[in-house]
Figure 1 (cartoon, rainbow, N blue to C red):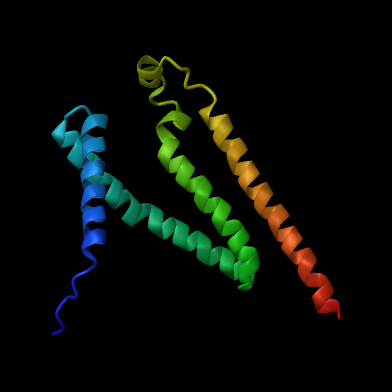
Figure 2 (cartoon, rainbow, N blue to C red):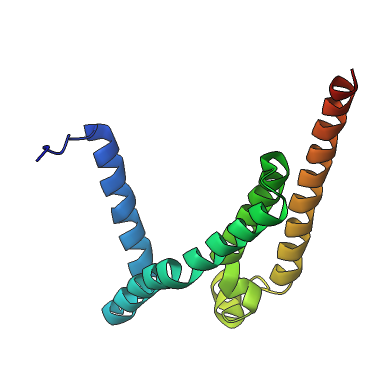
Length: 146
């Protein structure tokens, strides 16, 4: 049986620091309720692995099937979709309005408009990707015609 090769000590240190930072943020976020922190971390891992991962893997496979494997086109949909999904995941409590009162109490700012801004950012990501795809496709056409 092969022995595991130890990784770069700097990478291990960075990993441990990031895990410590995540643990600290979770404790601060949930105000010291250890049961809720545990439920939140375990739930997040389970929801991602058992629900979200199969969903976006199936969506990606459907996209590749529909586009007949044209990877240039597929990647111009994957990137804005992934960025939009990441923004939704990070800002979901404010986008959904579930923590509006708490956000306003802590920051003295209104939580209104997060959903509209997320939709605008998503539209801008897809529009920018479409423009980039059109520019790249336009540059490729004259070469193909020769």
